[in-house]
Length: 250
Image (tube, rainbow, N blue to C red; front, side, top):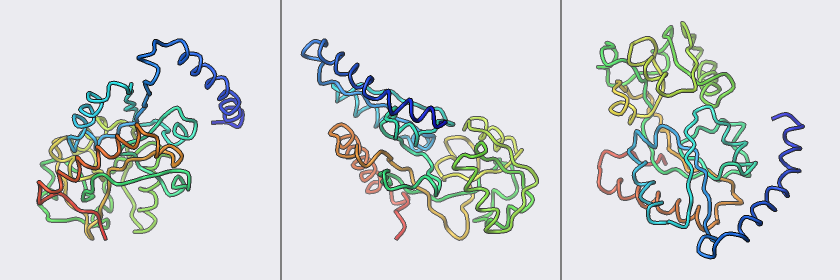
């Protein structure tokens, strides 16, 4: 946002709070304690089949109204700070976004893989290094996104040059490019079966996590704490029931 936009949000907050208080005062007694949760949901929530467990939680908590935001290009960090968003699941934080006001905990760990078309000859390899991607066409998030920043950092670190980079903030577009053989991408192992692509683990092994992210000032809110504890319990049960589930790195 511009400086004027930041100032507007700050100065409009008392009016927004007053409006919420007014709405609360005129609601029927049975609905006054309903809380609203606005949650940004990333693609790994679906590829790890976690969404139904999320829905089950809210089915059992009728006192919470929930809204899911699935826009890949959503600036959820600004949304959290402006309190337009309550929490985010499976969103990448770039290094400059990892600030002291954000709380984050890992729900699921997965191997980071090179994603490619099923008929790509490299799909039969046991592993690929970043150097093996030299000269490939690559997919990335939009310029300035956390995904794009990490890709640029990887290029600098390993001195890699790609033949072309396709940028998109839509997971469907990205996976269509991968599946067609137009480009390769980086992503978690769970994308393979969900998006019908091949996933070859990176070497050396690199782990990536599906995170629960909110403001530190919000983490003790009863509804957010209950929801986080539900997801942690679900993911722990999955780890117990599947020997193949990746564990957090030491």
